[in-house]
Length: 217
Image (cartoon, rainbow, N blue to C red; front, side):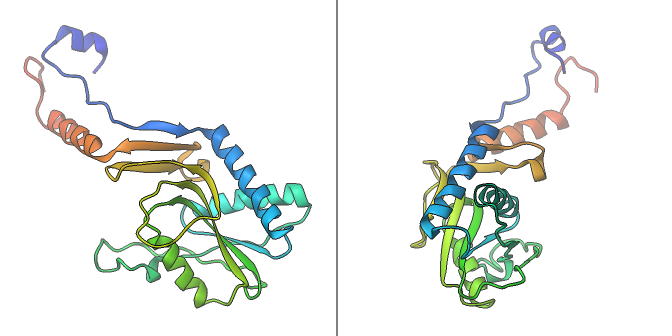
């Protein structure tokens, strides 16, 4: 309903606003990934030992973007793939089933390599623990490092990222959402209050089910 229609019917409330706010835009994300790429090169003294593995789903395009930036600097490609951790999670049976994602390990494998795991958000650390278990079934890397676009804190396991695009202090009632062009048509990081959004959803559902007074259904 338009504002003009609402003005004609003052008893009609406007749809509740959601609480999302943008904390990183496309330029911020681009700069963060460029910085991560340079830090990977500096720490490992070049790209030769590095293999990038993105954790599906949004870790995969992030790994590909970091790989492209490393290639632009070093003039050589970096083996890049994906690592599905679904069957290694410790919440199987506790949460609704997840669909299996794709694992794609570069042809030369990971033995003796420096594997950099790439993910969008680091939270409890349980996804990364699952990734470490998955890696153990694939090979024996020389070292494993972790790169994340956002570290939101609240770790439940002793896991720390080596490369962080943005440290984002949050509360447990907040939700961090990463939008990437490959999936969402835009690059952005949003933070929202879960309780406020749930209340907004319920209010919207209630408004949709019951026509306001004075308006014909």
